Length: 104
Length: 466
Image 1 (cartoon, rainbow over the protein chains, first blue to last red):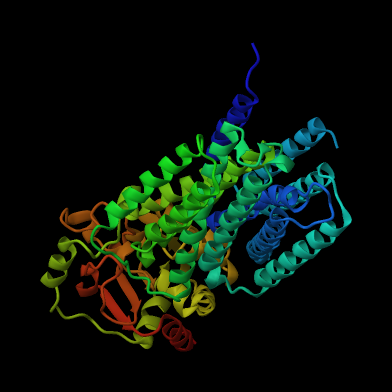
Image 2 (image 1 turned 180 degrees about the vertical axis):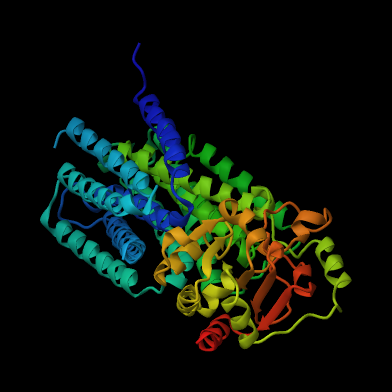
């Protein structure tokens, strides 16, 4: 009997929730703000859907409604990706300076 | 690129994102974690570009769209002050929500390019997943915009309630579920757009009754929603990277909401259904203690007390963020350390407007993170401490939470500042905190009230420490 591929995706989903659960509990509370900004950045992986939408016309000559939505989605996701990772980097950098101060 | 190869590469993306979160378990490994996250994202983008048929005209627009977004994001990331992090994160969540809606709408109108069937003849499983994704995305979008506006001060932070609010929300909730189910039999555009509109509306309605100090819960909750929206789209597009990421982000936000609720001893439902200050219990406790005298101090007294103490614990709250007092505070602590005073910081889980808000502000002011302690780790130390310097916090120090079962904040974990030999409260006035409960600590003999702006007072104390 063939298993529906949906079941495989559901398995990945459920197991990932558990991974997320255990990994996030191990995050130190002082880094909860960077945790939020980085989860925000990675959830912008939705850009893969935006990329499909951007190139979704059949003949390639006309820009379709779906393409326009795709470009918009790419812009929004890009704001999040660059903004999210860079602001996380900026925050984590501040935690670094103190290590040096401490060692002095 | 073959579908199998791209699936494996998307799986690697998922693994890299797990490592990114894992890195945050300590500040030392966190930057490596962020690097993993960035690599995962680059991999995901490259793989998806290689998996679609690229034609030139659209590629040009795509690059333009990516660059515009990248430049805007980059500028925001470098310009944003650290005190504005809560609204930034809320704003970013709204973008994820809107992007999810746009992708779902696009997939609805051109399902063939997503491999989901034909227009208005989409596979049943896919249309349900699409309906869920677009609905959660729309809720995230409007909900985050309201949260952003409340945090940015563009709209009042106080709860907005009206009669029949819960019924309206419940009705809309039922409508959304019915519409998603109805999509199975009728995929017409009217049903699809009605679903989007109902979801946008409920996102707006859920967040308006929630007050400012409950924002840590709301932001975490919207964080979680943005993850579930991504997962919903991931199921629609049958994309492993999106499913894994959505699950990670969804559970991360859910855990943070749980931690925040626990920090206030409130159930999640209680926060969502409306703010403090609306129940009668809070006003009655307020009247009881209105007219007692308080001891009013100045910067000189505070400086004297702290200089002669052997240990000081600083308790920062949202007021410190508003006054941007973190740098002045650090200066004060440096002076105290020169006088051989042992100084540590005590952070309540719900201090500020988002999880970890105080920690980031202190980090910005170069406070070493090993001097900053969470509630459970430091609460026993107050008894052996000479001075507690409470700057911009109120409810989280209120001993009534331990003693009066009638108080709305009863049972909330609080910092035991009253056990210190003396307590210094920096506050602008006598107004009660967000919960609307009077803080009896203000009237105790060992409490000195310092009425001033948090930053100005701290700077004055610094001057008197010389």
